[in-house]
Image (cartoon, rainbow, N blue to C red; front, side, top):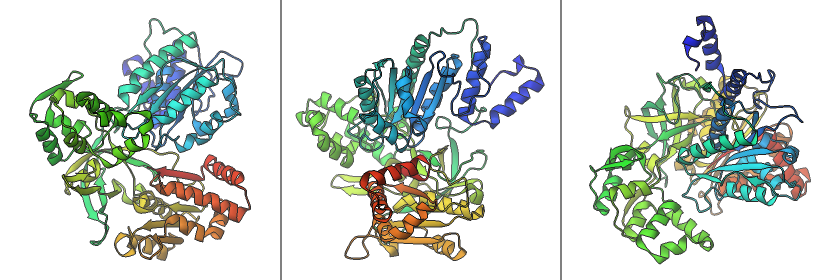
Length: 597
């Protein structure tokens, strides 16, 4: 925010009011606008918020920042980069991948791509069409393009930042010139993203022939101080922790309600809640004991000193096994089995290990001497867990609700659990948890409340659709609501059963299809129910309905996607390529949205 001493009181109040009312993208553009004025060159006044500081075709080069984001992290990093570029007075635009006109690629001269990897090295939903175009024969040669790619990923997957690496390689193959190596940021994003951004801004200055401004320091505008963010979370009180599966269920699913009183947090249906977990004390003690360390020993990392117990409890991953840690362990032990797992041809074996083993398992199987400092340095920083919000603020006011599956199981050597699900499931009412809201603009209810919606959410994927129906009932939306839900058993796993039955009775839910996979000899899943309702389903979609999918990315979401393609062929008389184009068009229109994990 501009300091009040530089402005008359009346002007400062206007600036404050304006900044508080703007979204981050608009603030980014305004920062660049003021930077341009400060350097004696006023930028165009009528630039759309989605394309900051753009220049007309045929004038001086500009930077294009293109981002692809599934959960919002890549968008946040791209906006941060745009803010720094704007402060340097550079001409640029920031574009989400699905809003990018691919025919413009041949004319680009400077392109930065910030993209997250989804699942097994795949592109996020908003980038599928761009990646498909880039890898096709239609992609142009790019001899005049300079570029850099920043990938966001998760090193607990074998193909870490896989989509970023493949985009980088493809751009080079098309003749473009790489400005810096692909950035590969793990869940502790800033560790890699910040130095990558600093280098990228300097390279943009060089490429656009823009020296740093002399005699003036431009400070980008930010939202008002005290705003709750990932780095500055709000300590929320737990007001309800209620099991919503039966005693005979094989799952422990909880409904949690947290108070937002005093936070000033606002969220919309479709947004996610970020939760900072605390590792279970029993697990911390087991790791410390196994390695013969002193939990009270002070460990200094990057000029920050904490006791080992605090590092392991609040700042390091202990349940998630990552490839970098395996690499460090293999080097420390010289173990041939571990080293073989890290070879390119061992992808499937590594994948199975990362999916089935936790840190404690690998430490027990491959003993090695560790100092406290070496251990903390080798472990990945703890990251927040994201949960689809299961409530509408129009109904619950200063509360936020979650639907949580507690991941816990026993092994021969002891209990295992998920860090955040164990932490949240064991929270007592009145205790507190650090949270923040992550907006998800690609998973929003239709702006036209007369549109029908189709919601497909098995298991805890039901969460955002509870929020959707609450919101639509409160706003008196006239569009119809159709829900597909699945779980193993009707008697023990029908999440929010009484709420859905009441919603049907009240006319707030118009259709409900259920798939309880283990209640009959032949397993039935939500994709089977979609095919069984193919005629009506296709009619709803052709009539303008929006389709939403939430849940498991690796199996359910793929099967649902294929079911929709099959329905298009069966009911629409399309061939496979036409069905794909139809579904791609729905996604481009915002009428086919997925919140998958």
